[in-house]
Every structure is written in structure tokens, then in C-alpha cells.
Image (cartoon, rainbow, N blue to C red; front, side, top):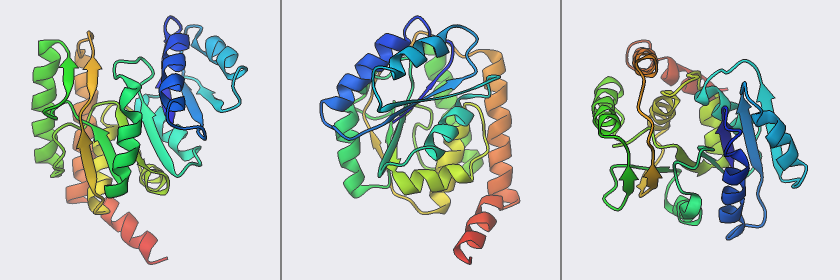
Amino acid sequence: MIIPVFNQQKKITHSIKAIKQAVELWFSNYELIIVNDGSTDNTLTFLKGIALTDERIHILSYTPNRGKGYAVRQGVLHSQGDVVMFLDGDLDIAPDSIKDYVESLSTADLVIASKRHPQSSVIIPRSRALLSIAFNLLIRLATGIPQKDTQAGFKVGKGEIMRTIFRSASINRYAFDVELFTIASILHLKVHEMPVIMKIDRRFNTKEIFRMLVDVARISYKHRIAHQYQHEYKKKNNT
């Protein structure tokens, strides 16, 4: 499991404990790769202490902050398991459904949390919900991907497929999920959307929205105009 974190010294110990408990309830063979994305507080100190207590916990750390997409990509590319998942380290998403998501890989290549699933329980600010709906409409128009929710921070995939996707990914911040699904569509992967329990009290800021729009434009250009993703995978298949 990949857990990206940034400036979470106040809650990281509790978060990792809760995630470990959820994983260990069903799985004995696992690794937690916690990626410290250039935290400027004492997050790394806490992480080092946690890692000393469990050899299955591995810490990746670097400076400066490079974005959630970069952090997840580093974690995935350092992974070795048959199943790879990533989950936000702030526990905005409850980790209790891990077993169900992994089991769903028997009929899918990727399993993702979706706020739009009718069985989801989602508590978020109204402004964030409206922006999320508008952003998803924009994404579907710009890229053609069919997913109803790309941004929920819990996704599970078959290990080699996840590593294949992230070897070609380049988006470093919040729109990296859009690139993931764009590449998945080119590879004709089966993506299954699952319900999620989520509670977020933060609102988007203008800087985040602008960065996401710029990144979506980059992905759309690479996919629909330059056909860069398609050429890359065609070249790989011919070698």
C-alpha cells in the first residue's frame, strides 16, 4: 500500500495505526510504503519512529514538496506486490473496505473509490461537491474517460498494471488521477467503481483549481492531439 503524506505530524501516528489495523484484519503479507512529500514540519521524524516498530513499513522521503501525483508515482514504482493500492494518509477516506476492493480485482484491472456510487457515504463542503461535479464533466469532455469520479484518494490495481501505468505518468499534482485513467483507457483496462466512506472539511483553493485545469489541458493535448500516450504504448508493444 502506498500512503502519500505532507505535513501530517499531528495525525500521522494515528492514521498509520488505523490503516495497519484495517490491512492486518485480512492480510498478513503486505508492505506499507509511506511517501513523505517534502513535509516542512516533523512528519518525517514521526515516520522514522513508526518504521522502527515494523519491518513492513518503508519510508520514502525527499525535498522539496513535489505534489501528490509525484509521491504516489514514487511509491508505486518502488512497490513489488501483486496488488498495489494507494490511500490518502489523512484518513479522509475510511480504510475499512480494503478487503472488498482487493477482492473486486478478480473481475477488474483497477478498482477505485467513487463519491458518485449510490452506496457511498460522503460528507464534504457544498462548494467542494459542486466543483467536483463540474471538474468531472470537464475531464470527461477533455479526455473522453468514462469514470464518474476520478479524484477520490483510494485506488487499487494489479501490481504490474499499476507499475506500467505510472512508468508513463508525468503529472505531479492533483490531476494525476486523470492521467491514470487516460492511460488505462488506452490500455483498454477494466475499471470498477466502488462505494466509499469519506469525510472532508477542507475547501479547494484557487491555486489548486488552476493547477488542475492546466494539468487536464496537458493530458488532453497529449492524448487527443499529440497522441503521445498512444505512440508510447505502441512503441513498447513493438519492442
